[in-house]
Structures are given as structure tokens and as C-alpha cells.
Image 1: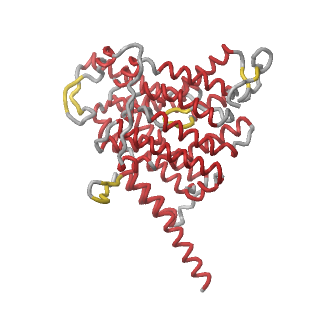
Image 2: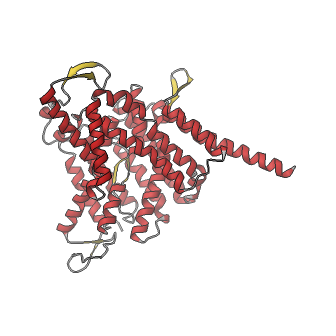
Length: 444
């Protein structure tokens, strides 16, 4: 069921306590309201993450709408979800940028990762999700998620924070308070609210204190204003965003491929959550969901957009409203596409000062890393077993360093990519050796 929603209740009204199923809809004005709410829920992270990755937020917002429609069509309307910008690629994008790669190189690597993700979805569709669990058990999945987050510590310390340390600190504290003290919808927008607060504070600091002498994003120390609206003034109100073609480099591709592991785990978790809320068995369409995310990532990155994933923020909205209609997501997708046609909006996002991004990313990166620990805790991973502890610990340290290793001349493997190789390869190698040793001891 991709289209053809049945009208819920009497003329599309909603009584207290009622649930609207994925194949149902309310009256059109109500559905537009729910669709707009989903746009607000996804908006903060969907435009913050592209900025952090050095990609055009206008393209990301527009293509998130396209991605959502692709996903809903591939799952045949069985899983109501919005596809926004994925945080799992932030680490890889930062590593590529630090090595001199531009937006085209980043999106080229992401496109290949999207292809791999879609192929993994095909495998899962035909063989079942058990095959993924054997290759990526919780101890490995948790480690990869953790090193993706913590492996970005150097980006905060070396790039963003030095640009304006006091604005970074204040932005971080404001975001702390919003996320921790507001448990409802406002809390879900904590990152966005913190970013806006830091932006306003930076503008006020320019008016009160004048220019700041500090490093720019390129590392050059100059005297400059924190907020520069030149690009906003020059941008048009309406027009197509700045699309660009991808550029493929092997070293960049290897750096972002570990994110596929996190995306598979993330998608499975999100889809399971939707299944529990809607009371349906989602295992038969799990492969389709991952295929949908992979295809959507390929399409978006092909024109300069950001990688996509199913969004927990929108799952939270469904949990609060108990309205699971996929029509709300189609409406949200159309609204997102229309927002992408406002270049002045994208220019405003690009004007966000580096110090503000430092205050926000220190939280984002830390939260990503701790999600890995959450996976370990929920699956009761035994770190008394050296097979679990040794390769995992080594891989995380290599990522946090970040440690760089030259494989051959002209090709380096470092940071998150090197850490992931050590975690995945080291775990399975030690597990195989441990089993061989146990078998040999038993036979003797």
C-alpha cells in the first residue's frame, strides 16, 4: 500500500486515545498539520549535519524530501518513517575534509556507501537479518558506533572550538539545558535551539566587542567578525540549490564505509520501534527498509546531498501523537522539497560561526559515541572476555588518536577507518583462534 489511504473515523476526525494506522488518514487540513510537525522534528539535525560535513544544507533539506518518498515507495507504505541527514557519516566526512577533500569527494564516498548499504539490504531481504548479526555482533556494532563519535574529538578541539572558545562554551551549556530539562518536543529541538542561541550571541558579541582575533575554519589566524551576512545578502530568495556531481576517491570511500555498519544497526532499531508502535511484524520488510535507505542515499549524494537514515525524532512524534499515517510523511517530504528552493536560507545556514558549531558538535559527537556503549549495555557484552576487550579497545584508541598508517605510497588508512578495520578484523580473527584453541583442547 503506497497510496490510497482510508479516511479514519467520522470525516477524518480523531477522538482521544484513537490510533491512526499507516494506511489511514485524517482530514486534509489535519494531515497538513501533522506533516508540518514532522518537518519541524527532522529539521534541526537535517540541516545541522550537512553544515558539519561541509555540504549544502539547502540540497540536504530538499533531497531529504525526495529520499523519504523513495523510501516509502520501496517499503510499499508498510513503514512510516522520515529520512533525514545521517550523523553516521559525520566522522568520515570530517576525516576526508581534514585530508584536503572537498564536498564532491565526500558525496562520492557517500554514494558508494549507499550502494553497499542497498546491497546489504538485498542480502538481508533474501537471507534474513541473522546474517548481519553474525558478521556484526553487538560488541562490534557498538564499537564502530563509538569510534565514529569519539574519533571526531580532534575536529572539535582543532577546528571548531579555537575559532571562538567562549561562544562555543556558552552554546554547549545552552544546549545542555534545553536537552536535559525539556523532556517534550522542545527537548527534541535542543540542538537547533542551542545553535540559534549561539548564532544570536555571536551577532551580539560582534556589536558589543567588535572583531575577534582567532583562527578561521582554514586555520589562519585573522581579525574578523564572527557572523558574516555577505553571502545571505547576495543569495536569491528563490531558485535551485547548488547541486554538484560526486567525485570518487578510493581513500575517501574506505574512510566512510564503516558508517554502513552503524546505518544497518540504526535502521534495524528504528524499524523495530515502528513495528512495536504500529503492532505489526516488520521483519519481512526489514531488508526493503535498508534497501530504501541505501537507494535514497545514492540518489541524494548523486546531486550533492547528504546521506540519509530513518529518523528517531519523527518516530518520537508518532509515539506522542499516535498518528502513523504515511500520508503525513508524504506531505512532510513535499514541504521539505519546497524549502530547498530558497537559496537565501542555505546562505544563512552557511553563516553559522565556527565557535557555535564547536558548542553543538561536542555534544553531537559525544552522543554518537555513547550510543555505542548503549548497544553494549543492552546486549550485555562481556568485556571480561579478552576476545571482546582487546581488539575493541585498540580500535577505539586508533580512532580517537587519530592514528594514521601508510599502507602504500599515496594511500593512508587512519582514524575511524583504521579503527574499524582493527575492530572488525581483530574480533573475528581472535574469535576464530579462540574456537580453534578450544576445539584442540577438547580433542586432547
